[in-house]
Length: 110
Image 1 (cartoon, helix red, strand yellow):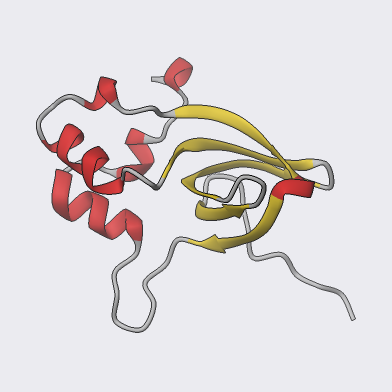
Image 2: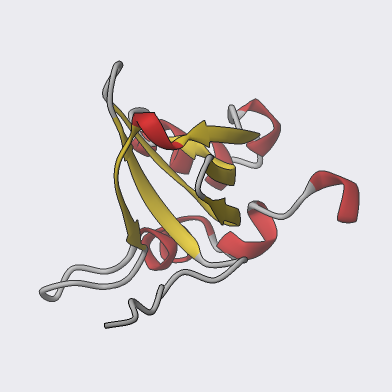
């Protein structure tokens, strides 16, 4: 049976990492056997991130382009609404007024 991957470049995803345990939200840049390339941020300070962006201080957000080696990846989820709860992207748009895809875009392509 062939497994179809639901993940496409540009999708917004949440990645759960181990050792140390982290949750990262971002835009998928690439997915291959060695790991995941992602433009995003750590979700620990989510409320702080939303506040900074809402106040026009987005440059204070620790947004980065990173490679996550597969041995650290515990799980990856599409950022989508679930059980009536909005996706992180919907929450970001609702609370900041900014398009999350634009916020997570490569700074060299802006």
